[in-house]
Image 1 (tube, rainbow, N blue to C red):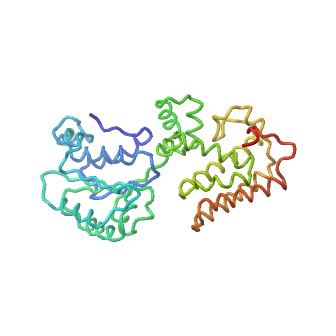
Image 2 (spheres, protein in one colour; image 1 turned 180 degrees about the vertical axis):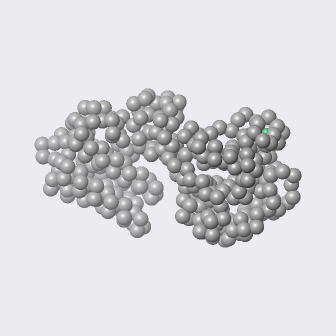
Length: 335
Ligand SMILES: [Zn+2]
């Protein structure tokens, strides 16, 4: 088997490869960048290359005993740490890792810490010791989408490698492989912002439904729908809904200005839809501000459902004031 490279991240791999060819890999790396852009994939490839018995090629051979052990998930010198779902990475895990790394072993030992932002403060301090005096012939790779959650002393001990969002064509190809039409894939990829994690979550039926409800919220903000926002218990979902609303607002304004669907994020929506929606630009601009306000509430720990309810009330008022005189709504009435 071969350890792949996420298309679009070849440049980062070349850089790592050069370090290996010169025989100078750093004892610690920090792979930082958004979720779903191939950090873990590259960390696994990098681990395989460090552990591979075939030296000099700068890439894992895929055939030696070490490569086979790693592929089978049983390499004794490869340590993968990751938090349990929504959990943290504690001191005990780092202490165990330190013991393993200090146990002398022939060849390299590699540790990959996925979601390093989940390290508790105690664990980060223990990690710092390990980074300050790394055991010989070891490489520790920390992966995170939130480098700011790490102590600056931890960060400064690692060679940081920054991952950017994936090119849109990569996300489109990934979605097409999963059976989406080109048009749908282009629309979803635009919303995914270069992250496969986000693209995957957009594919879930439930999330698609929230995108529709975000639209409905803008077109027909109604009090008797308030109760249904009570379902929104977690902050992340509320953020997603606000994102969706913001994307709709952006697109509706943009379409009014340019009548061009190419630059739209929700471009998977048929052309007639864009022509039919007629919301006054004043309303859309006010909606943008209301969305900002709802976001601030969310950050200041207001209950997610309450943030959305506040948004609905604000939108209703704006809709009354400058709602789109003579405008038509492509949504079915009633409900
Ligand atoms: Zn090998």
